Image 1 (tube, rainbow, N blue to C red):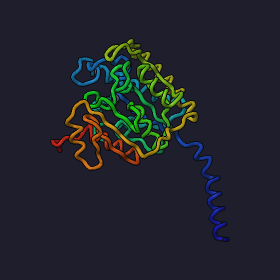
Image 2 (cartoon, protein in one colour):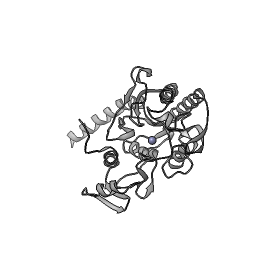
Image 3 (cartoon, rainbow, N blue to C red):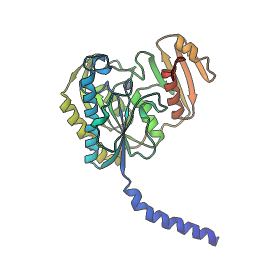
Image 4 (cartoon, rainbow, N blue to C red):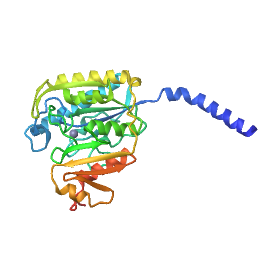
Length: 300
Ligand SMILES: [Zn+2]
């Protein structure tokens, strides 16, 4: 009993000395960056290395992340990990970033667009995001792969990339605090998560058209919203979605659905859809990455 008392008081003393330190925990920000929602982007000409404007839009994509970092820094954030999360995952111009920023690039990776996140972060931001494949209005609206999937559902609900990624962030106890993109992408996130800060850098007209602002204006808006989000970082709560999760992937073709269902644990729901269940969103993420990236002729 006496011994136990000593342990308890030692723990208490420990807690009292650690508490002020914990309150000063550095504000670490995780930034996941896609490209379809970058200011000015409307077609594949800006989105892939074969497009005539791609080189220019890598600059704008990089500048928007730098704007988010600058804004977050003004509000007290000190550490940043940036996940390049579009196409070949090697779009960001890494020499433009200040020392100390870590950039996640290349693929495959188990946490997809959220690789690099863990429980030490105070906030997550989505820059250059687009709306879900089920959204009929958004510029370049798709989920994971526009060429591959007509729908991606989690527990029966059609998912956007932002919804999946907010769930991954929630797994680590990290709240999403800010999103940039067209009004559809921002609207989807705010509908799901409440009053996260939203930088609307374009108004969608159709899948391949939008009313856009100048790059400088997009960057200024993102900087202001990132700053506002970190100023009130304590207002945000992580998503609390917990497993088990039931993932349904609806392919645009028959054959991938047929072959995926050869694997034990993967169920064919209908001609184009397979179902996979897992306890953790991390396993769901790994499954999606496998489903989108595996090829028998992968090398090395
Ligand atoms: Zn995307």
